[in-house]
Image (cartoon, rainbow, N blue to C red; front, side, top):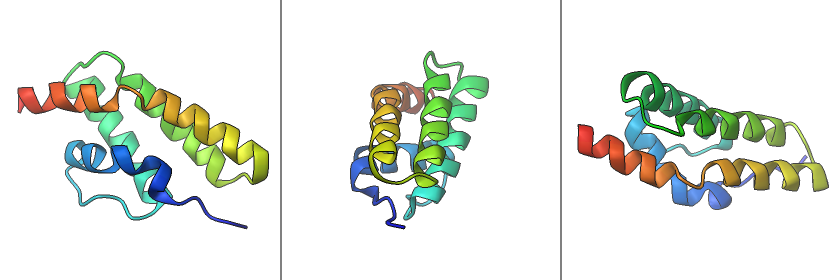
Length: 97
């Protein structure tokens, strides 16, 4: 089974790692874990609107990791859609820190 490369997720890796307070993810699985941590912190601690979208993206990415072919591509596109405002949320979080 082919693996998912981080290239599609590259625009989000550093921002998510910042919120998760970890080095940038080097695997999709690590990114999913960091994404869940970031979603929790942005929602519960910072109360930033849209943080639940990151959890949704993590769910789609988990499903994509377990999928192949066309199904994987669809799930990745959905995940990226839910990451669309991640940078804005992280910028808001940085202003709070």
